[in-house]
Image 1 (spheres, one colour):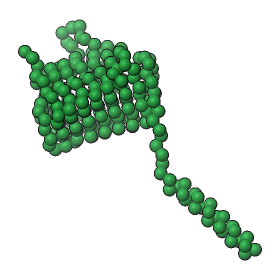
Image 2 (tube, rainbow, N blue to C red; image 1 turned 45 degrees about the vertical axis):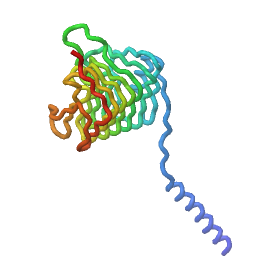
Image 3 (tube, rainbow, N blue to C red; image 1 turned 120 degrees about the vertical axis):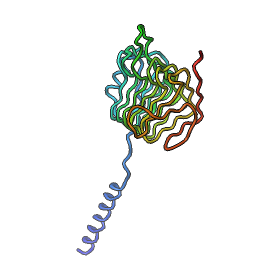
Image 4 (spheres, helix red, strand yellow; image 1 turned 60 degrees about the vertical axis):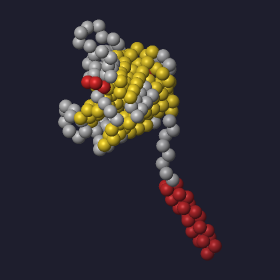
Length: 231
C-alpha cells in the first residue's frame, strides 16, 4: 500500500511538472506568410483580406489602380515591391494609406498618380500615414503630382530611408509626431523649396521647415540630398 501511495504521488508530481513547463513556454508568433500579387485584382484582394504577419510580394510591373491601397490596424506587414510601379487613376485620393498600423515596411516601390489633364492638378498624397508606429519606407520612389510624398500624422518612430522623393506640389514630407528618422533620401523639385514640414506636438499648420540635415528633439534628418528646382 505504501509503495502504491508513493507511486501515485510521483506520477502526479511528474504530470504537474509537465503542465507547469508547458505554461511557462513563451508564445510563438505566427510565421510570416508570403502573398503574391500577379495583377491588380490580386493586389486589391490581398489588401482587402490581409491579416497580421504577412509579406506581400509584388511583381516588377505596372499596377494601374482605380482606388487607394489601404491597410487598417495591421501589425508586422512587409510589402516587397520588387520595383513595382503603382499608378493611381484618381487625383483626389492617396496612393497608399496606413491607418493605425504597426511594424510595417514598404520596400522598393514606385508610387504616383496619373498625369492630370486640367488646371486643378492632383490633391492626393502619395503615401498617407495616420497613427501607428515603427513604419519604414525604404528604397522607393515617390513621384508627384501628389501634393505630398509622405504625409504622416501622430505616427511614432517613422523611418523614411534611401528614397527618391520628387515633383510633389507642396512638400516632400509632412510629419506630425514625436520621433522620425529621415535618412539618405534624395529630394528634388518638390514644392516649397524641398522643405520637410514638421508639426511636432502643435496644431496645423506646420511651423518648422527643414531642407538641410539636422538632429534635434526626436528628429533625425541626415545624409539627405536636397536638389533645388531648376529655373
